[in-house]
Length: 107
Length: 286
Image (cartoon, rainbow over all chains, first blue to last red; front, side):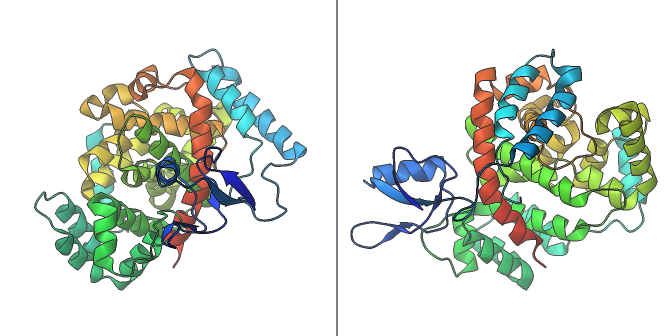
């Protein structure tokens, strides 16, 4: 769990505790994966920091192992080899390559 | 290639094809009525205790992130709106009807692919200012409805397509076109018509591999098409092959993406997966 400035929170970050107004009213509940709209709302509600949890629980890594990443990259290259010269496909492949490091919620 | 009429005939003649639960049909009809009230919609859903419970559980989940617990179905309906209720009910019913059946078909991998496409759709619809992101989620979730029909009710056809895709190194869609049978897009649209899905959703299912023919439905079909492509690139689940087709230029233009935007869209898809995964778990609960 980490206390993060509201200006550094990214969409998808999961709250580690309820966000409350000074009077105690709950603005957003613990466990919510914050959306763009909610982050903007909190900024407008003068919230300066929030507690964000590690999305996979304490001690878990958000990235897959080097071996799994290498396997995914191998599949990516095979998948895109026939189409890499088609419009936009190289950009899609390159953007995906970086994100294949991320562990998915069901993994 | 066979025509849409052929797909409709196949759907009409399939034995054992489930009918949509009456509550879903009634809801679909009433939700299109501009004079329908929150009370009307609530009355339809509250007669189905299982749906009732699922809607309340979903509205109180992290997926919707409401600040207060909702205990009344009527309040849930007014907060979520008709479209969201319609689509929760649709997705729940279909998921439960087809569930994890189907020979020679990785149904778990398939639903993960649909989930990936669904979060892609919410991301892209928001980028083009379509604000009902909870409703648009279902476009991605149900875009490959035709593959479910094939997997459960047309097993020989499905087996032939998968074999052709594997041996000829083709995408699923290329393989079904090569076999000159009906396509999963046509079958899915025919079933969507039979179940009286909203026209925009039916057209998106029908044209998501052929957006150039989508006419007035170009935007929705394009969002599904691009989301499908991005979900494949990110290797989210499995959809019948391990390949990727070039993204349609017409679809790319319709969703207004630039190559510099792709990374941001993918990041938002990953964030969306975390919340949406909980949504799918709740829908899939028996």
